[in-house]
View 1 (spheres, rainbow, N blue to C red):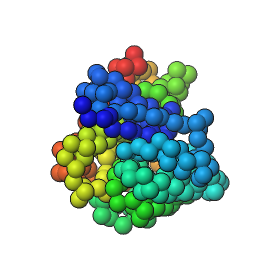
View 2: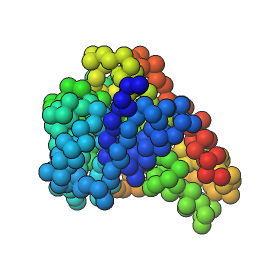
View 3: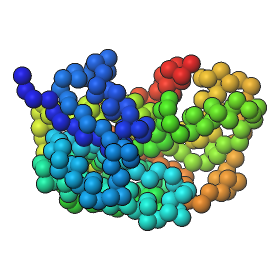
View 4: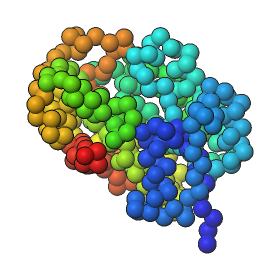
Length: 299
């Protein structure tokens, strides 16, 4: 029997990281656990602001694949925490990519719709020029560039509006607010594609399996990976209330100007996923269907 593929995951407690660990270790997700040997870490195991410790872990593990799901994702706090955001979003990916290069590992790294300015009228392609407007977006773009420059065998998945049944995300925040409120005011002029962490993790594993079974170096690079379809935060919230039987909650639409935040939000950050479909025959579920699955698990 071939040896299992060694996978090192950074960010095992995060929404995507925890799903990767679950799916790689659970037969019910159509993954044979014998195919993979998984080491999963988080802040209690290695501090990604410690470059020496981060590099040492990769060099010690000598994995075949490294998946970095860690990031400074507090978009507004990043505006006043530039150094920390840069350490986690740009420098740590650089250190990991460099270590991957030295041990011969491939790397999966996640990025964001915030690398774009949000002024487009049609879904962004991977080839479109980034123009981040926030510290979060700028540091995530720097992370992308560091990985791409140092390590040819990389996959960078840009995603958006990620949620899951666990963790801090828009869905869980709205459900929590619905416990005490009969009315919610939600921004309706920002458009994107909600992405279930479960589906993003499954897509990641599908890409890895193809590269393991039928390697093709031409496939490495940047891919957009979000749930299918387009919505805005206000309509997303209405769907959450409907599917969770919170019919007593009314949702009114407000503008971005009525809800100012420290970090600017892209008004239109829909990502075009056609490249992922063309190269790997992967198409993430529609955001409404994925949301229904997520909420069914919570009930």
